[in-house]
Length: 123
Image 1 (cartoon, rainbow, N blue to C red):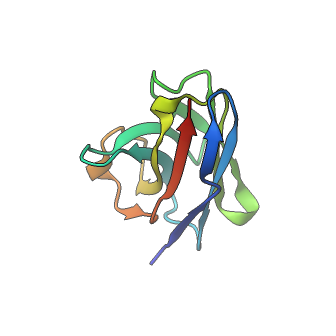
Image 2 (spheres, rainbow, N blue to C red; image 1 turned 90 degrees about the vertical axis):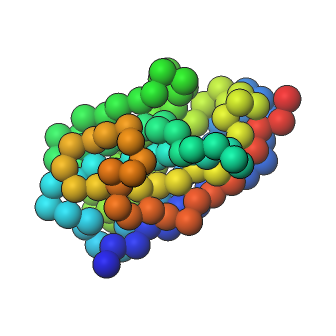
Image 3 (spheres, rainbow, N blue to C red; image 1 turned 135 degrees about the horizontal axis):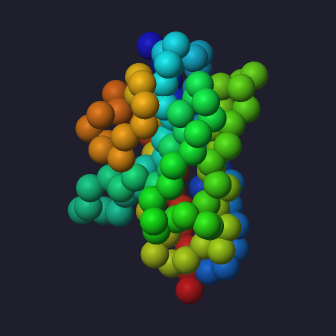
């Protein structure tokens, strides 16, 4: 059973940067996607970014495109989310997730999740 552990959240001011990390204990599948979602209390999880591991292709929501960058370290099965020019609207719990196959923006199609890390951006 693959486990995902996020780290790197915190409290920052608007315009600052943070880098989140998600370490996978083992390679999830032979063909898989790693993704970042975020969630505010009382709302559904929202897709932020994803990487299709085999090709390295990346995907972003319109809300984070141009400010967030997803990257990886193959040797450690770790995926990162570099978040620049943060806005108060980015405040949320950020979750790492993985699924077999190509990326999707639908959280219910991901079958392994981390516990999340809180990101708070003050104005």
